Amino acid sequence: MKAEDARAKTPDELKDELGKLHKEQFNLRFQRASGQLENTAQVRQVRRDIARIKTILREKQQAAS
Image (tube, rainbow, N blue to C red; front, side, top):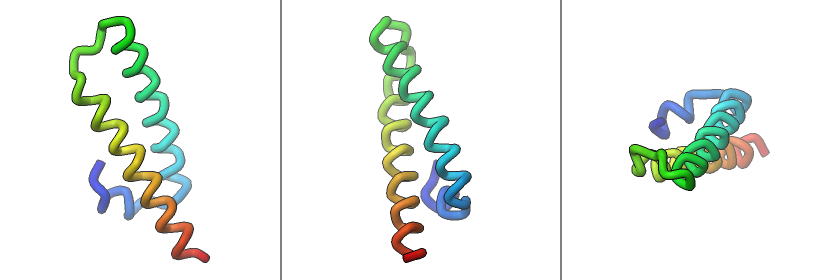
């Protein structure tokens, strides 16, 4: 997900996306632990997407205050 796509979403949509990414991160960690993970770069991408969404949510909270 690109930052400009995330900025276009509402805070509720971002929170939903964040929940989905946390579930995906859990599944990827589980796959890595059991040796079934094919694409190891996906772990890094999901982690960065989570950070990106958290940053944008924080920016939106700051702007609202």
